[in-house]
Length: 130
Image (cartoon, rainbow, N blue to C red; front, side):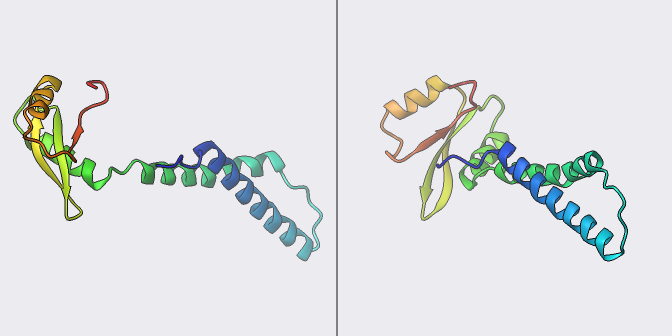
């Protein structure tokens, strides 16, 4: 997976775009109406932060969505018996399928060592277990 676009840079670019568009609109309105009032630049900068923050939050939310494989693994773990910490998955015809759930890393290693798992399997465990 290639590195995603940094969120801080996305936020900065969104803020610059919104700031430029808003200040351009304000300047156009003041010139077209013949007014020469001052623009509150710090206030305009603060106002532009709101929509830029929304853009960053939306992109962050989209990135946080689990993949179909992760969704299937989560579903299997949550619906298995208590104490289950992981799921063993394979993809058949493009559809992720859970073939086993495990209660410990030792149980997975025992299952993998027995030769019962296909060679293209993946195991999903919480990060603090691995």
